Amino acid sequence: MIALEDFTMLSRGSEVPLEGRVGICPKCGRNGVERSEPEVLFFVHAQETELLGDGMLTQPWDRCRLTRVASQ
Image 1 (cartoon, rainbow, N blue to C red):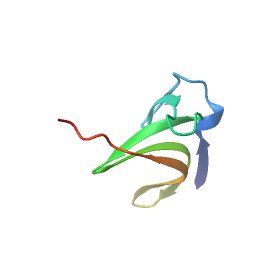
Image 2 (cartoon, helix red, strand yellow):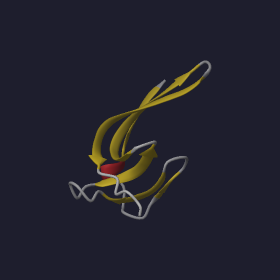
Image 3 (cartoon, one colour):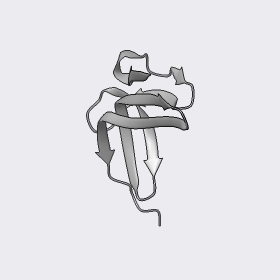
Image 4 (cartoon, helix red, strand yellow):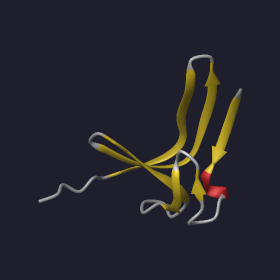
């Protein structure tokens, strides 16, 4: 089973289970969910989720890469 989640269609402040709170992307101004990976920060606007026999595979379809500000 494959599902496409479009966070741009959700209201700002909405809670998405397992993803977080919907907010405004500082780069493009569209709604999305912030996702942090080592060394990189993304704002995901839409993603594809596939349920597999051994787990779930989630891949972003539409996202903005943000510049991570180094802490001093």
